[in-house]
Amino acid sequence: MDDVITDIPPPSRLLLEDLNNFTPPPPSLPSPFLVFSCADSKKNFSPSLLLIAMSSPSLHLLHHLSSKNLIGTLILPEIPLAGNSVEPSLRNKSCNIYALNEADKMIMIVLVQYSVTSERANAVARLLIGEKITPQRVLILDSVQSHNFRGRLSPDETIAFKLETSLERKQSDGNASFVKGMDYYPSGSMVDGLAAALLSRCQLKKIKGTLCVSWPDFGTPVMSLIKSLLVGNVLSGVNYTIDENYEDAYLKLSRRKDRTDSDLYT
Image 1: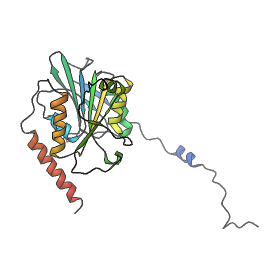
Image 2: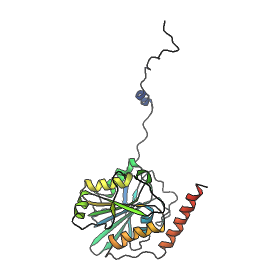
Image 3: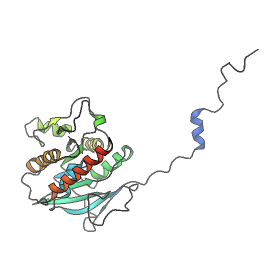
Image 4: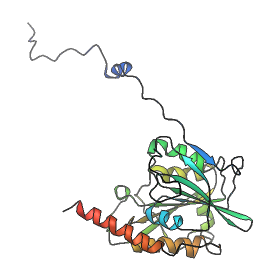
């Protein structure tokens, strides 16, 4: 006679995947979309350079570039607009698009001031590159994520690396590198999220694209590094002005960040 206590019970008549049939699927999120000013709503843009800033120092520096004009914004429906100020602010959760006109060329600047999930990264990348906006060249500025970096990252060490599309890399091999004096991202390290989606979009659309990642995300040295990259390299020869108080404002922000981080470990 079988021992009903110690014998292996018979399999359930319901498989695990069958249980999902009783759970309604989560509602799909509305698609992100672009909103431009009335004068620009029907235009297609072909800027000579599209600058996309996501790291703290690049956002701060480009926010204080007073020569730019606000022309549009990217709306991600799940990001609430409550609490945002009417005027552009670094405190806003927004993704504003600006134009910096230089003679007959246009430079477009995108300040991504909210976190984009991996699930939404490709949809956002498609809006920014290759549909209404078709740039000749793209530069993405992001931070090194410590969990994706193969090696030790010291908070006292300022570093930056770059990744390029094959078209940009081919031109770089001819000693005409767009971003000069920067090492390539170490083998074995990863980039994910929106930065990876944007660079992949450039590769897919055969656009010259460069992703620069810097570490750490706060501090005067990393701000100096990003400023040197933009002012002395990328925007060389372009007429623009930067607010005089941007360095003091960033120093205060960095100190608040350092104090917050130190409080976590006391």
